[in-house]
Length: 80
Image (cartoon, rainbow, N blue to C red; front, side):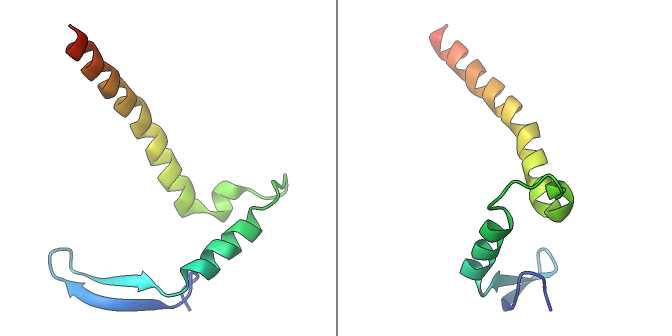
């Protein structure tokens, strides 16, 4: 079984050669995540426990400084 639970497959997308699907029990997944992270435990390596979430955060951390810089640059140009 998929670790997140059942997936309702909707359609094949030829452009990406993949099927599009939706997780059927999002509320259960969210509840399980909240339960698993309710207490910050020293004996749990959360980067290992949630590698996909870690990858998303690492990507955000890379993008945020460049987005902030672009936003600041736009303001400086507008005020010039």
